[in-house]
Image 1 (cartoon, helix red, strand yellow):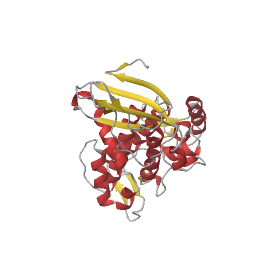
Image 2 (cartoon, rainbow, N blue to C red):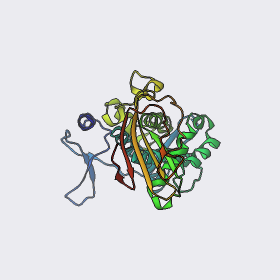
Image 3 (cartoon, helix red, strand yellow):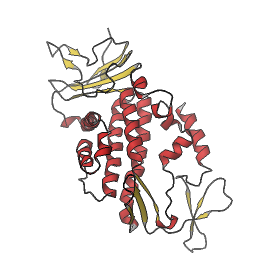
Image 4 (cartoon, one colour):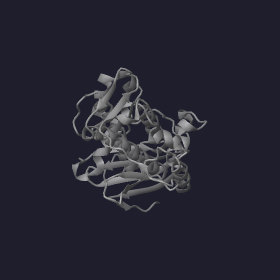
Length: 312
């Protein structure tokens, strides 16, 4: 379903002048002239040299700056472009129940959007992945935007990002991911932050082309639209309080890695993100407890050190 949606969307976008994927053609006469060719175009388009970029910040109409040279502007371009790719990757992983890796990409997506805004307003930031610290920095310069972001969600994403390398995790490290809650929160935050900064080349004048995200929505691009409450008739609460898939992770007292994936019939805490995952029982060597202790409709798997445990 995802693949067919993506193919249809690409077919729509390939006829649009703002498509990102293009072929650079080098002239055979050695003149150095380059062009852009689309499958539907009889002649290549001239690709004029870009020397400077203009960017606009939503809510700060007095900020309409020009960045020159391109070597400086490409930092902003790279952050925005990479953030969108991380967003697409995170959504595809969430939709396919790969919740751990999805949350890691969700963190880098939000991180890069915050960094692009801070860069645009001239606020220096360290080159790190602590998105929670970046959110606190954002709140000092755009409190209205920061207040619309669930800080607990960003806090747990920042924590999950640390789990890329297990050797850095101490005994007791744990987290919980609820698929629909995380997906809906990512969709909400990305839609909020993505529109904050727009850019174009100076030669294009004062207008700003639609972003990749905006074009994806217009074309009903599957990886963006599918199960996105923003573009359905469901409210956010209706979406996240339906049947849910939950992933839990813990480094046990003896440094073993324990994971569990299961379904619950309904999420009764739509705004909560901070849980203790796989809590030890009275005998921590034999017992663990799931954070969502109400009725579990299906236990999908439990693993120990990467090996699936037999289900009783």
